[in-house]
Image (cartoon, rainbow, N blue to C red; front, side, top):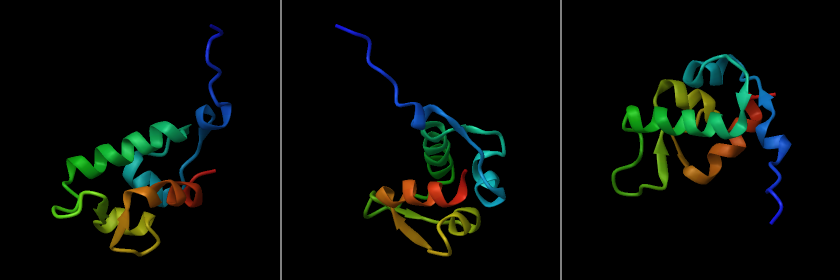
Length: 86
């Protein structure tokens, strides 16, 4: 079997803006690593909703990343990464 090709778009480092950098740091990293760091931040700060684990409750930093929304679905996180990283 041939080796699986990695999607270079996902592996290309992107630079977070100042709002996202508050959560994950300012160093350019791949989109996949940004998602991992956001989830680590959510777990560390206990921001997953207790009743509905699919929902993320934003603290001050994440609410800024989420465009002012206090709560978002875990499926919306990728949409916000695109708005805060180039």
